[in-house]
Image (tube, rainbow, N blue to C red; front, side, top):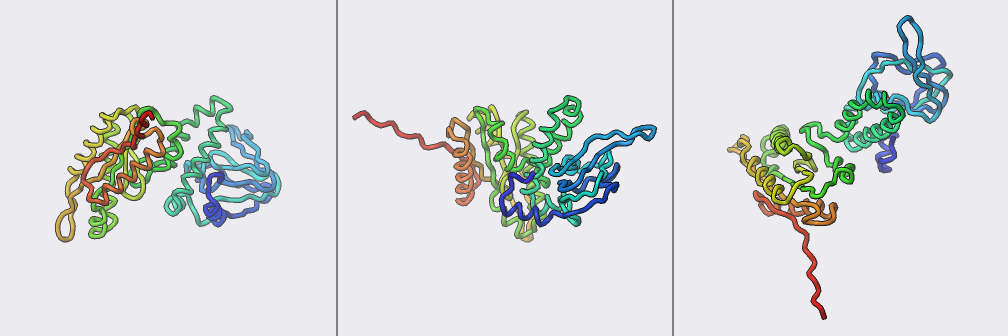
Length: 318
């Protein structure tokens, strides 16, 4: 569950983990209760069962020390539809501890929360492979977990972690990367506050999502702070350039925002490149396109530039 966390992040998890004991016959959870925690059984036995019509009981699962209980329900914020009862005196680790919630975690530690949710997806996916019935019933919730793990909550754009985790799976030749950073954004935020910046980011997000919908493919992304972009599969260099120019014009067309002493007009710095046309290494393409974006922005921005790796000159025959 926590295998992908860094050492200091694991310490944060430890600080937010509680220990609870459950006497034999006591319930850990029951139907209708919202799953606000998941549990790691350290000692004892926990059985999960449902009540059938007529009062009969159907046992669904039995957990022994080392097992994780309720992680799937916790990750999707669901209500339990079964009972969990201690068959003997039991001890459990509870995450998060009382006083914490998934919403608070996502607000204060979004990177940690994302990786925990993704690990939930991996673990649940492995479990549901065993029967087709469970796969069919759970497919929607697996998709929901992916969305929660990768979606930026304030704009609805994909997080940068999506590229980090999924690029090897989605990388298709040719793949276009278009990055955009609004110019002089600090002026707007310093004058009108972060709420004005948030409103502007939502407007930019709408433009990005509209472009991907029109293309019928691709991912609209949010990177650090106000840096955004589009990742487009099966996209030629000429098409990528057209998309970059369209994004440039659309950002400039955002209605000016009010300032205390005037108006703020939107412009954007845009850098783009195509893998493997412009660089045979995806990591190199991404890093250098991002560097070009920042260099362009620092020198005034308000233009579209293309990254192309410097081609090695052929040696002349001796």
